[in-house]
Amino acid sequence: MNRDLFWLTDAQFSRIEPHLPSDTRGKARVDDRRVISGIVQVLKSGGRWVDAPPEYGPKKTLYNRYVRWAAKGVWVDLFEALAQSGGPPAQVLIDSSAVKAHRSAAGGKGGRKIRRSAVRAADARQRSTR
Image (cartoon, rainbow, N blue to C red; front, side):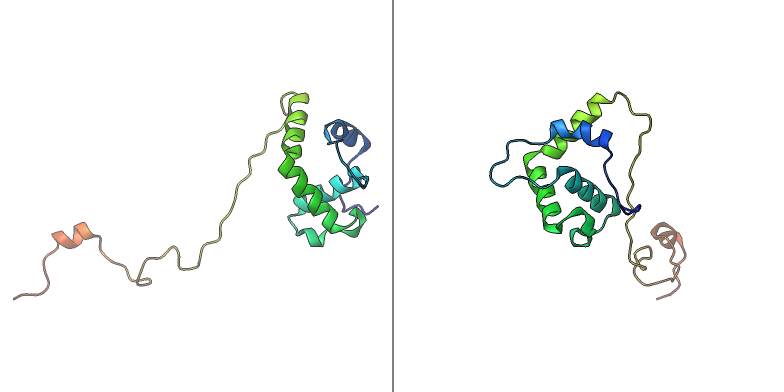
């Protein structure tokens, strides 16, 4: 196994397995552990589904399983069950986002010219005479 890839341990998968859907019809599902490990790898890396390493199996299988289980609410139920069973978390993380702005987003119209505020301009002596 490649050390850079994510793989669920036996203990982790044994906690997840009871919460997985078992009401499937038709062809038997491919290895759940391999597919879930692949889904976590793609989500963790922030990459595209097509860039998933081949060790996890077909990329289309990873994507389809993720989307179908999301529509059925499997992921939400799984996360809630795991969160309730563990007690209070030892560590809590807060995610933040950074948004790139255009290089001229900070400046106003007209570039770098310094202008007086409207209040100072109104109080100032007029420059032209009639």
